Amino acid sequence: MTATALAPEDAGRLEQCVTEGGVAVFPTDTVYGLCCDPDSEQAARRMYALKGRPSRRASAVLYFSLAPALEMLDDLHEHERAALQALLPGAVTLLLANRGGRFAPACRVDPATFGLRVPRLPEHLVALGSVHRPVMQTSANLSGHADARALSEVPRELCEGADVVLDGGELPGVPSTVVDLRDFAQEGRWHVLREGAVERDAVAERLASI
Image 1 (cartoon, one colour):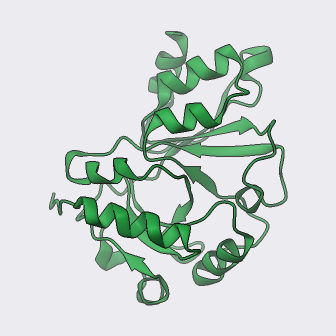
Image 2 (cartoon, helix red, strand yellow):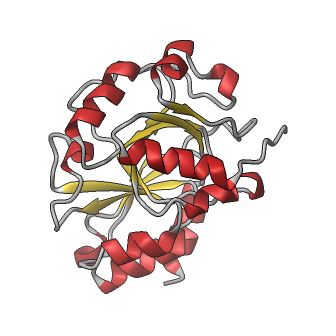
């Protein structure tokens, strides 16, 4: 697998792009993504238009490290916080109760639900860990098409329409596993809505350990 190491300057370009309302193509621990400011409806609409994503569909909010995510989510219940620490960072997207009404552009028509991603960055992408602000993230493909595991697989119109494009080499190519934790705090229940890079049994094992 080819690995292209990102530099601190790349992380700075990504963070500046998102801060200024732009859209970026970037690598994760799973597939290539598109991202923008999760608090900007204008940026969200531009990203959705590039991808052809239905405007009602939610997108995840991605933090590049766990600490700022936990700091932001100061209304987590004890069991929810333990679940996040057991599963993140990792190739999972966690659906949580959005008690604080955060990131409305990412939540779209379901403001009560918040999707959280914190990737486990491989060595050649660790520079992205210096990006402290969250990003609104979706896969860098045309809606309904295959995910991109290499920059060459990202549709040309997405790269041409983005303000920043980062090449992280070839990625695993399997999307994140989506885990619904909205009933976890009160009832201890969780559900895998999409099995991807992390198998359901691995999720169960980690949650059973808390």
